[in-house]
Image 1 (cartoon, rainbow, N blue to C red):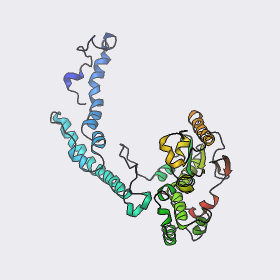
Image 2: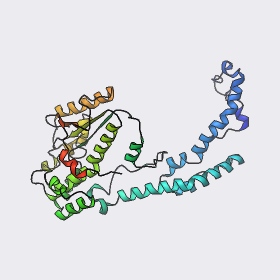
Image 3: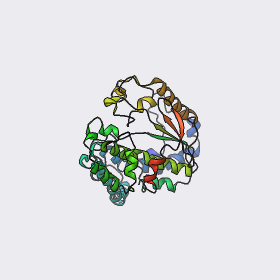
Image 4: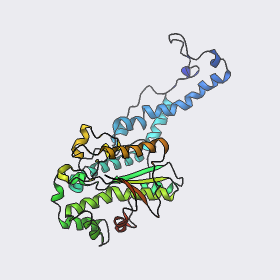
Length: 340
């Protein structure tokens, strides 16, 4: 908000019914008048950000560079502010436009169903410009952060990617050549094929590819995140959701989203019916929800903290239990791989 000199002398509103809320107990001191004059310097920068750029532009105009050119520039602004605004726009527009167009390209890429297949093309969550520009990749940023940070509860379902291939039937269309190409594209060793062949009994190429995508997209990046935070000294707890949903003829398994109704203890909701394939297990929901609630209240979900030696992990299933390093074999092909 631009504050004219006429307004800067006094913030008291004597036109308000009942008079100003700022009475003589405050306004009688010399510092009050000084403070009103200083307000201009503090308010001006925030007013510029809200009315001109970049706060208003991010909120209203979205992700492309056109927003900088379309932002509102009130003609009533003081000439000094108009000149300052012009300088700021010239300085920041190239950087902001470059960053925003990069986000635009990411959105277009995520919507490319030919490139990503069933796992892409229609993602409900897309990048948002929130006013903070992170100049490094997430894991690089974490590595640069020396502080341990807050307690972390992290985990995945066992078969995340099956949600994207089983209901559509695409899992039955996958050929062995596609699996080989995916493993090769990820620069995994030749032994990886044997590892993913064990992902399910009599695993088909579609099963193998779903297991690979589950690891590359969800499980291994989450594991790297946990490892990084443990190395930094943060308290970390790891969990896997292993319950096999009977949906889709029993083939959906422990896919993405299946754990949500358990985590929030909403098995009876209409939204959960399609992925649960039945009423679900209330005892499992009580267990999972109970651990989450305890973590929210105390910062400790109630099982052994994750470490890089034994890697204790709570597996949520018909019978839930803490197991040591459940991803031991699946981790081997990904040794040394980064997820930037």
